[in-house]
Length: 364
Length: 72
Image (cartoon, rainbow over all chains, first blue to last red; front, top):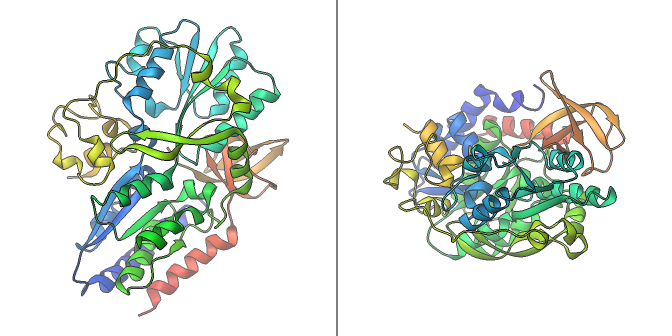
């Protein structure tokens, strides 16, 4: 497959790995790199890249799994919407099994809740068109990659005057979360493997403050094994040779410095920046997206009542610390015991991109 | 959930395109892109093309990797 297979060239990957070993053989310290994005976490584990690297490179998983960082009160509200007789909930599949305070969307579906998994927010709009007597609520969980697709769809709903389509916005922004992590000073990070598809939308400039103010090197990275190994090479080179930290783009076939201006324009028109709460990290200023006033008739929270239960946290689950990079799933007492992909206690075990799910599947 | 893949545009109609990858065909929305032609590759996420794949840059990345492994 063109533009995929070339970046899975085992021979080339091996040679590049050798160069990384060579570069780090006399480096006296550990090199700590964080992959911010959950899709990277999965790609790293699936390809086995981690096992090829020198022992003094440590890869940490970051908070870039949208389902994982969605707090319980969001889930509880989604579940409350699902209990309304006049509602159809539409969602990406990853959200179905995430435990809220006392239920999950999957459990509500088994109790006759009308909850439908969609591939695209456009599918949710189609369901709204086909069910004019129902309120069709899309659970807008995701990052900058997905946010513009929401903007296009809300605009289309307005143009076509579809009045029963609503979005429950839980969208979050990556750079403020990265800043929250580094400014908390709980962990030392030498370099960030920055998310390739978030950056396809926002470009590479929003990370420049991290290099300039926090002295952390950043490489915007693609998702094939060669992309990841090349990014690690670029980060290692910059750090070992003590070059001034900067933001580099490895994934240049998709990412421009300025991002996708059309997508950013649409996001700016339909969505506005707001404070947001992240599981494990807490409140982060200006890290979320809600619906602009001009489009408020599509805002589920502004238009649809829900009786939401009191929020409870999952006892013993350390998902929050895992999302901050200060613990790994192996530090968790529930991991592989009470908490498994079949019976997940925390969100990081449910999502296909969650760090706990990745460790469960791939770590010996 | 930020998974996206490069797919080839094989048909364009208004604001939608049919794209193909390894025999799999799919209809996607083009509302996030300025201009697209049949034969172009696009990065597809959740039913939308989020960027046109830059074919020159794709080749440049591979050239750069080859240079990295040949140096030293």
